[in-house]
Amino acid sequence: MFTDRRIERHQLPYFLQVFNGLTDKPIGFLGNVSEDGLMLISQLPMMVNADFKLRLKIPGVDDTFDVIDLTATCLWSHEDINPQHYDSGFSVLEAPEEYGQLISILLHYFSFDPLQASA
Image (cartoon, rainbow, N blue to C red; front, side, top):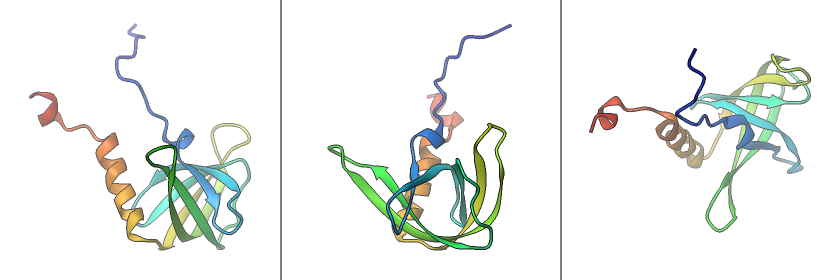
């Protein structure tokens, strides 16, 4: 059985932390993201049908962070497969242009283009 990994996996939830946009306190990690929504992985369940001010801090140059503030509604929240963690799905209501840029960057970073691989 093949057990050696040749490509390092990058676990997105451990890199992009999500903060409360009002208090700037951490509330979880970004599990996945799209133009219309995102999934938050947190240690507590989120209130469904409530609007949240969320803040993403994207690592920048020289140990700085670019901040993306957005407003989103929690559509669902349930226990994760990992004990003591919850997954919550959000629909994005308001987001700046930088949110769309973040999605494009993540899509490019985590995509595999077979044409480039054969070059």
